[in-house]
Image (cartoon, rainbow, N blue to C red; front, top):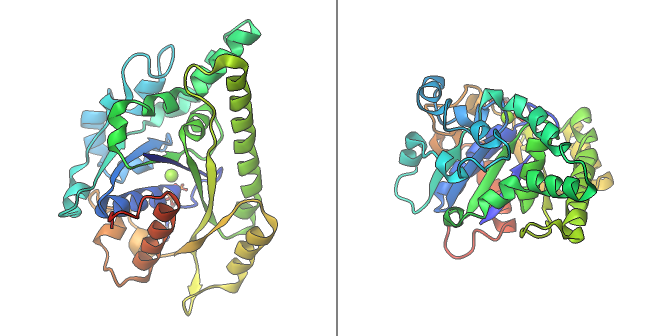
Length: 313
Ligand SMILES: Nc1ncnc2c1ncn2[C@@H]1O[C@H](COP(=O)(O)OP(=O)(O)O)[C@@H](O)[C@H]1O
Ligand SMILES: [Mg+2]
């Protein structure tokens, strides 16, 4: 199982669109995919369920908010109880060994960061503080170690556009970090800072583990897969010059690797908010340029994760 955190401090850069569509493509190629929605905006969840369905069956008991609540995330009930299988997308995949499940977010997840921060500060001894730090930051990592999750080939976590504790639990749980970004000044400016903060978090976590607070779950080493530029403007099949300059700038001056694949701006495909629970890249014509780009991105990402040799396609 490979776990990927999809993150960026900025909202509106295509994180959720990328998570939903990459997940759906991977599943349609025969992989068992789990999506985890960790953004209180709950957009990923609403890509697969209508608001009515969510209010009806999901919101009160079956979201990640209920899991993070309580004295310590995951102590009240196992994460596996939250797994949902959305029908329309799985039916749209037709005949494949793969499948797509999701763990729903909740609009009130926004309040959980504060509560977790209070828990983090709740110990009076240094030893106790370190243990708390590891317990809290490692909660999602530990939960995903449950044998049940070994059924999955790929877990994609759609993070909130911040670096709060919930996002940090996703980084600690992940083997890889994927950073969707727009090719503009402000978006590219934040990339190094984002990766620096991840490196700091990993350093601190591993330092505490080394001091004996491992709690049986070891050091972590998430790899930054890199930035994937989304919503790029094309002209004659080339990224327009003003945006290519920002992409080149990151390539040359940033420590963040840049993926070869880019995803074009295509309001025709992504303009409406989901098409009856089936991500656009599953239902659009295979000949559409953006579909080819998403396929190439899937090749690149799944290849880097070692998930597409052995006949998964
Ligand atoms: N390649 C694209 N072309 C056109 N619109 C897009 C594209 N990717 C995303 N969008 C739209 O841009 C908005 C923000 O995308 P979203 O994936 O929700 O970003 P984030 O999760 O980073 O906030 C949404 O309305 C989405 O439909
Ligand atoms: Mg989002």
